[in-house]
Length: 61
Image 1 (tube, helix red, strand yellow):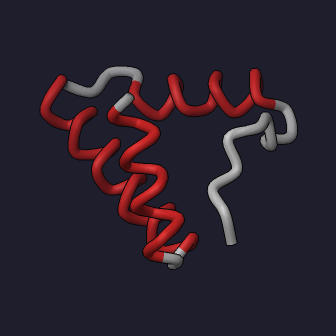
Image 2: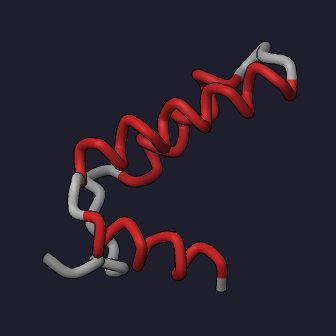
């Protein structure tokens, strides 16, 4: 499997709104912790270490 950097989310605006909503009212610390949990949950879902490494490298750019 290769890292897909093309748009691939159904209703991306709706997802973005949902993402912002779960952060509403959180402190910076709680918001950062939520982001960390989300990243780990999604990384576990992906599962492929090569794809995860490619995602880390893409995010670093």
